[in-house]
Length: 93
Image (cartoon, rainbow, N blue to C red; front, top):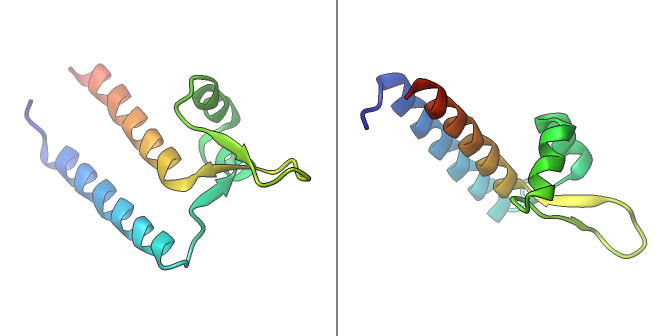
């Protein structure tokens, strides 16, 4: 498979963003998780709920006395990026 300049640029940009995000998480500048509500805002409720139902991401509770759900920040970002790539490749192959 051959990649266009734009496709290669997008892949490299995604990799750089993932590295920066990992560094920010490891240094404690951002949380390793996002709330389910923030995931809904970023990716859409239907999509996040579908990914959870399909077991592609896991939403877990912060504790026993709260209803707040958390999702791994890197996991959902990688899933959203790869999901976009699969859709793009299916439509352009």
